[in-house]
Structures are given as structure tokens and as C-alpha cells.
Image (cartoon, rainbow, N blue to C red; front, top):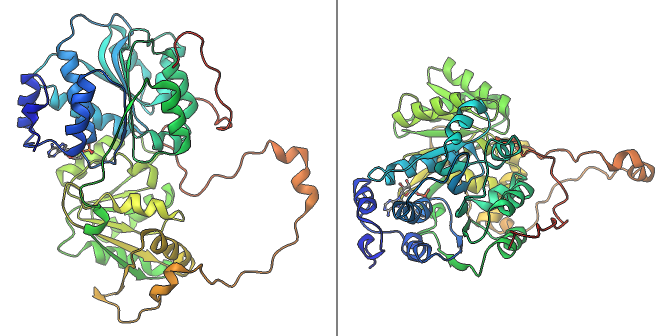
Length: 448
Ligand code: AMP
């Protein structure tokens, strides 16, 4: 079995790893670290929870420890791009931990906070910048930051950046980093656009893929209570009062819904706080700090805001409302059962949400345990197993006749598509989303 000492990392970094309490490298760490130390580009297919952050941060810090000199004003040696503010803050925190015994500087550049402090921190030059793409582009456009001294660029959770519409910004940023450089791309999934991105910007990358050690979903007890909207409030309060609920995340579809749930829980004497895109960065950090410290045990979140929340001890995930996209359910419940632990995911499902429940069960291939209030498994089983493999049988309302004229109206063509529910973004891309199919123009000198 590979040991940390086999990987070629400098002594102060090994000391920090030991101080974190890690004894053996995870599979992604054992694979990525030597290849990154050898200077190769990497495409890593790995999910959160596999130890992927340390896989790129440890060799990055090792390389930094062997370097001399600062990058110069308004520049950085290494840039890490992340989809959300929370993930960026988390990565920077890991860098500080793993780099505690070496001299280094790290600056987080994200939206939602005043730019002045970031500009000041960047002005002297910094070793590592962890950023979300929108704010970083603003600093570059305003002449406050440059990428011409950057030697390493790492894209973390590339597929989520794609989902949030950051792909054009990423391409513009990548094109600004001169060659030779080392480029890493990490993603939980490999949609076509991410493959194309790797093909356009990485130089003969080594592809590394690790399966999660055991699929966390198998360690999660998944239950569903059928309740109409008015009954959900009291049910939620009673579920959260159970003695085994230590740390819980409650998911709602909307920011407004999250605030209402917090109010209702507070009325019921349960300390809770909301985290969503309308909260300032300071509020989010304060809330997350209180949640980690155990001052509050219940966090109420929307889907996007919950991404990048790295708390290992979440015992329960509760879906106050079911997501209309089945994949979101998998993301949500993956907040529990982390770091090898088990967890409970409870969904509250009203009549209108049954179709979502069906889609979730079809996607995961797992039938949620039907529960009755009082916490005993339901004996009434209203979803036979075979239904999981058939399309849902709804009574559809009669089809309305299409108004041909309307779809052809030129005034309709430019209209934005309605946002899907839950499409709240924590970091708005700097520019409106262009057509993804269009290939961006390549810069003549420094793109791959
Ligand atoms: P990540 O996939 O980077 O989000 O990491 C998931 C969790 O695993 C984090 O809480 C890390 O602190 C933890 N972790 C990372 N590497 C190791 C390791 N080698 N041994 C034990 N825990 C680790």
C-alpha cells in the first residue's frame, strides 16, 4: 500500500499531513501526487469526498516550496478556479492547513464581498490565488491582476462550473495563462464540453479516474414521508427534534422558502439558519462557522448554496421539498455519509411532488422507505417496485393547441428561456451565457 512518504513530498508538507491526522493517501492522492510532481497535465475524474483537494494542493505546495522569488506585483504563481465561494474558501483553508510549515501566501478572490481588500492583497503579488471566475475577470479587466506569471492552473469541479455558465469565462482565463504551464482539470463527470475544454487547453494530459471507495448512497438510509404542504412544518419540527439528529441540512427549492422554514423552526424552538444566494459572504461564513461549531444544528439551504459545504458530520439531510431534477437529490443526500460515515436522508413529499419521487427512484434504482409519522416504516406500500422501470402514469390534461404564430414571432426569439427551478447562482458569470455550441476564437499565441 502506498504511504505518504513514498510520494516524493517535501518534509514540511508530510509533517502537515500527519498533523491533519491522515495516515495513508486516498486512491486519487496516490495517483495524482507523483504525476503532478513530474510536471504532467492531468484530467482527474473524482467526486467530492475522495480527498481530491489534498491530491492537488499537496504537490502544488511541494512545488512552491522548491521555488524562489515572488511572482511580481498583481500576479500569482498558481491559480485555482472553483465554481462557488464556499468551495474557494474551503480550498484556501486546506492550503493554509497543509502549508502550515512552509512560507506561502494565498488569496481568495470571490464575488459577494467588496473588491478593495482583494485588490490590496493581490497588489504585491501572491503565491496561490483561489478564485471564482467572475470576480477574477473583473480584477483583470480593471488592471488589478494579471496571469502572465502564472505557472500552474487548476480547475476544480469543472462540471459544476459548466452548469453555472462559467465555461466562456474559464476559456478566456485559460487563454491568458502563458505556456509552458501545468494544467489540471478535476471533474466529477465528463460531459462533452469538459472533454473539449481538456482537448483545447491541456497538453497530453494523464487521465486519472477513481471510483468513490464505496458509493456513499449505499451508506444512506433513505426515507420518505407523504405529507401535504400544511403538514410539512410540524412534521419537520418533530423530525428534527429526534435525539439522533445531530447536524442536519434541510433543503428547500427557493431562497424565500428557506427563510420561511427557518422562521417556523425558530417558532418551534429549534435553532436554525439559512444559507442561500441572497446572503452576503460574511453571513454565509458566519452561518457555516456556527454550524461547524454546533451553535446551530440545522442549516436550511437551497441547492446551489449547499455546494461546496464541506462538513463531515452531517447526520441528516431533509428534503423539505423534493427537487424537480433527480440528480439534485443525489447531490443533496451526498452531504451526509461523508468520510466513510453513514447517514439518513428524509424526504417530505406532497401530492404534486410524487412525480419527482418516481424520477428519483428511477435514477438511483433505490426505493425510498415509506414512513408514517411516529417513525415506523409504513406498511402501506403504494409504489410497487416494477413501477420504477416504467414511465409514470399521470392523467395528462388535454393538450392545448399550439399557436403557430407565436413561436414564429421574431420578438420571441431573443427572449431568455425561463430559469429552471433551483437555478439560483451564487456567483454570477460576468457575461450573459453565450451559445455553448459556438467554439471560442483561439488566441494566436498562448492557447493550447
Ligand atoms: P475532498 O474530496 O477533498 O472534499 O476531501 C474529503 C474529506 O477527506 C476532507 O474532509 C478531507 O479532510 C479528508 N481527507 C483528505 N485526504 C485524506 C486522507 N489521506 N486520509 C483521511 N482523510 C482525508
